[in-house]
Length: 204
Image (cartoon, rainbow, N blue to C red; front, side, top):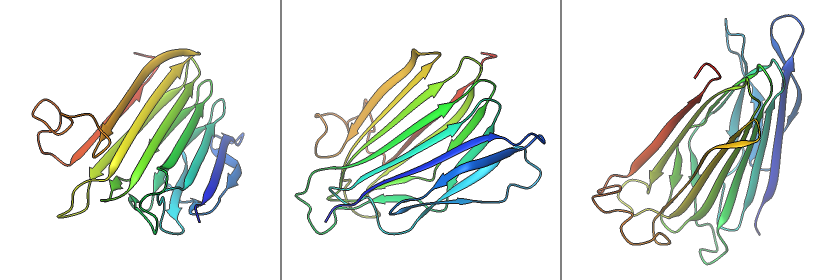
């Protein structure tokens, strides 16, 4: 049986120079925990995996908002491993991340690696909405297959809008469902770790 779960968090200024978390809702395998961030003006939330997920057929989602003036860091306790589960022929799993960053707010989205295990099929979508004066630091890393095994089927899409206008829209596909050439010399050339670091700042 597939798992459908959505976790939510919202950060707001606390009026004392820090950031409060009035919304911190966990669901299914997505456990959100406020963690200490000494000597930092950023509130910090760590995503802790409460069970093995996503498995083929699962539907997972996280919504995170840094309201106007808030400062928020979201990280993870461990890598996320996409697995085939008991039904390798099930529909692909989906993992959707919706990020909203308000005026004068800052969000550091720094999850650990996503591992695409052999036999898994995952569509990951990250959607970001930035206010004109918002700041964002976003890290994405994918590991294609565990040690000694081929990768699963992985499609990732990242879209970023600033002030309602598109800033970035890219999609990457790896593994059995990808067009020919994804592992060729013009793309991965046999490498199995890929990633990117995105920084947006109004000063740019």
